[in-house]
Amino acid sequence: MSIVDGNNFYSDDASHLAQIIDQLNAGIWEYNVNTKEVKWSAGFYAILGYKPGEIECSYNSFLEELLYHYDKPVFLKSLHTRSPNQTNTVEVRLLTKNTGYQWFESTTKKWEDNGVPKFTGSLVNINKAKILSLRSAQNDFIFNETGNIAKISGFEINVPTMSLWLSKEAFDIYELNDQLKLSIEEAVSFFEPQHRPLMSQAIDNAIKFCKPYDLELLFRTAKNNVIWVRAKGLPIIDDFGKCVTIRGILQDIDSNKKKGLVLQESINSLNDQNKRLQNFAYIVSHNLRSHSGNLQFMVNLHQESDSAEDRAELFAHIKSISQSLSTTVEHLNEIVMIHTDIDKERKTLSFEDVFKNVVSALQSNVAATDAKIDYDFTACPVIDYIPAYLESIFQNLLTNSLKYRHMDRQPVITCRTIKDDNHIYLLFEDNGIGIDMDRYGDKVFGMYKTFHQNTDAKGIGLFITRNQVESMGGSIKLDSTVNVGTKFTIKLV
Image 1 (cartoon, rainbow, N blue to C red):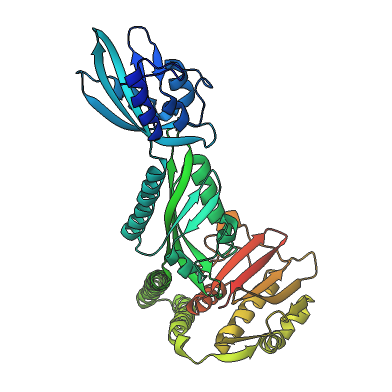
Image 2: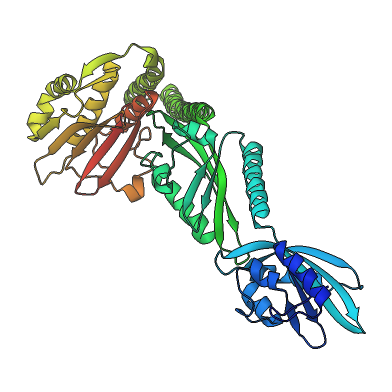
């Protein structure tokens, strides 16, 4: 076998053989284990793009300057063959002069020359075939992963270049031509504004912290269709633990997601109804039992009493308890009617008309307190609602503001509407004595709950208002500060 150091041939026959090998775009080398001497053929230099003598011909130069550091273990392992004449073949990357690292097939064989152990090897450039193989494997991986995980679409982010690859199915979700090229920023911009930061943050966390993500987000296609999609990404890391690629799926889950949201809404509604029914059952049991117990006790005392004066006093108590019982039954009947009235026909109502009617009905209270009442319904002037409910809501809130006014200042009451994301809100504010939310915040809307010393407080108005609002699919929120005022935020629909 012809071995040269780039300039000196060691025999005529060997020289002729070396020239043939060099013309095959291959290189050969020899390594003396005892002396550490290395010899390279002219073809060895040529396949790396160098001229003989242009780089140092040494064992250390090959390992430290030419061989890609990740490939050192596999190359050194190929040298550690146990038996002579055993051939080991590995694929390694070597630094060429003009084209960076390229793939080479390295074949190594151990032998002895007059008792001196030596290694002989050959190098063949396989870069084109290797790159094609890697790309094919990469495409197969993406295809298989996409199929296994979602069977919809795949994407890949090349972190060093921050470039994005999308499968044809992903372009179908975007409703774009698959010949287009999207940047990462452009791809993220298709997510709805409220979800866009979540997507961007997930990609940043995947790159910086190698954190995978699995998100369900709202997405607006190129044809302006808003759908739910699932975006799942898996960071691929190098040997140093750094993310070099993000691979994942983009899946259209709109149909299932909307069904799930409707189901969850129904479950929440049922849970709320069950809670209200349990609360109602408790109220009925507690209040009626209390009244009936008091009434029975007074009747027994009346029967046992011989004094006409005592019997007259006991009868007055019986009459008072009877009236209280009647009032309680009326309140309970109002609550029952809320759930039976829900099927009544809704009508298009003018906020201003209904509000003025309620203010007119309470005009004597307004005049007596010298209250200033302002309203503004221009943001949303009308609503489809049950007339009796809207009137009751206005009446209970206005009555409360007048009843719990601050005695050291003129009552100021404001009412307005706003519309946001197809929801209609009613805002009702006053400058009254307020409520201590730390002490009573969780009890404000309870039945027969009062928090002030007013003798005419019944604790039923807000309970009914909340039930009316919630039965229509809305919600009510209270913000209040003692001696400052109270604000109700009511989502009507």
